[in-house]
Length: 152
Image 1 (cartoon, rainbow, N blue to C red):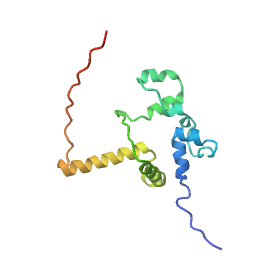
Image 2: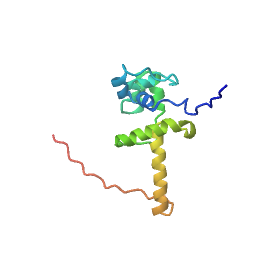
Image 3: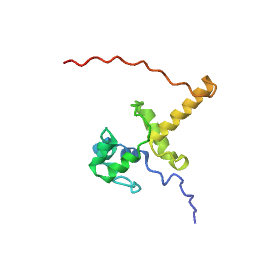
């Protein structure tokens, strides 16, 4: 009798499959080659591009669609947040995805946004500690931009 030790990583998704499951654009390109999304996905509504690319605008106008999936997706948005565009080298993005996929059971981080938020908060705390005696830096006063008059 040979007793095999259970593989602690056996329950983790393959990073390539996890990447395809999170990226709506990659799924369209690779849909015929890859099997369906893992069974542990809680809803199929997240797989549709319309659920992940909600229209911009006020929440009042967005709520008119009447689809429960879109409303629940919108409620997951972090309150008081602002969007930024972040460009990463492909190898660093792939590395981040692998780290998230394989450390999810230990850290609880299950999204790239949460991973990046934590990394930014940690870096800010380190810089504030090193360069500003551990205190937050004061707000930046932005000069008011001159607006061009509209042409009549």
